[in-house]
Image (cartoon, rainbow, N blue to C red; front, top):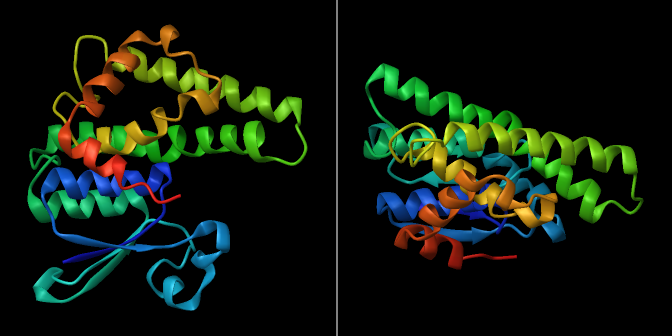
Length: 206
């Protein structure tokens, strides 16, 4: 059993998608980030950076429980644990890892800032909005180019796709017109047609 500390954000969806795709048994423990649950001492012992998601695998290495925070680290752990969606061949693994890190270092944080300044900031700052919309468009162009001639970012379906999809699903929040990125549009449709992805996204807690 895996305990998932979760809220229905793109980063939270990454892990429900992985758990469903991998067929792992899990239980959701909602962390209401709107009520600052992420700052509670019990949660901070699992996730010291006070961010969701986090997991506790009750059957971790050597049969002992292990707690893991940071969505990318969780995806890598689950991929190693199950041997699914995370290749063991070094060349193939590097391909997955570089696109996972691309999401973790750019496609997530930059789109998150886009959301903040465009939708939630109490003061609309044109410079900030323009900066993050422009960077979002650049990142979508990178993704669109990568998908030319292949269905998934690293060739085969992987944890990198599971990380990217939930952020791309918020494209309307990001002032992104998917008609400008047709390969991304097809990618989203392809991934959201998967039964495990549909189930994972239906579990939204917001």
